[in-house]
Length: 427
Image (cartoon, rainbow, N blue to C red; front, side, top):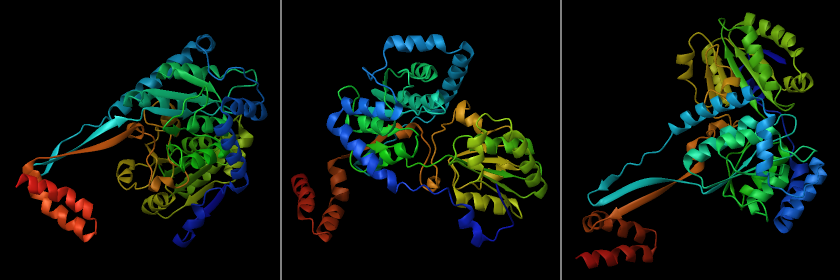
């Protein structure tokens, strides 16, 4: 990890740089796969499954028998842990329900909003080195609360043609009953365009590798909405002299093991903590099964010593991290100064893992600095707000002349006439 001590603010743009991903080489590949899936549907999805996932499938849909088999193959304790996490995620997201209020903007002019669920949503769940069954709970639970009528889940199968059983159990717990064996770009194309087996959806959610991310961005230009732009996962830890170095190191490494392109940053006002964290990272790294991946991520990572916590929070806001951990004595006052972050973890015991799995907050969050403008997935992500307005004759009189004047000033005669006719009728 790079060590940077007391950097000048002119150095901050270099400190907050993410690992650079050159997607220009893969864009053409992604476009070709998407076009093929759009043209040939299931046949293309199956062929790319052979090419990329090395599995030949007769049926893309996961059957009830496979769901039942998965139930038997997942240990009871893990299922109970999933149910606990699902309860907490459900409780937190239910608290986000929208309650509309009617407002009279003028006498006789009443306006209001109604929250309406997106009818069909698609969830992409990666397989690969870490099958993210927790993401099933994070994405499907608010979709069910919102009232989405159709929830489609795509995930790559293993070489034996089966989906990781924990993913299927999580899907059942969260109430998803349409699960398909499709991974990568072909899965995104299938949900964007629809195939003989996989329904077309209106919005796609979920993480993935750079091919999946490129596919989501391409289909979002013309065909379907997506949750957010995304890049590799990241964490920023702000620590003062009271921080537990072993906790901080564990948090940095829990991020680093996500993938070789992940990034972990420590910003601290204590040189002792910086030194202790460095030693703890080296010690704990040796115990990780994904040590090599974490080592690659640490090449992208930094330990930064600053003069005080004011500078620390300013640097963090400039970075706009996906995850922000405040391991300081005055974390509550520091939290008030957070402007840009996906999800914030307060105090010694709120590790990122808590939010990743079971505290109840959502772990699908904006990365790559997008926290300056995007929120993490929440209940609103699955809804649209439709506005309504009603005018009485009094309302038309109160705003009618203003409407006529403004329409005329924009040279939109038909707009003006629509109001003028009504005012004449009233008179």
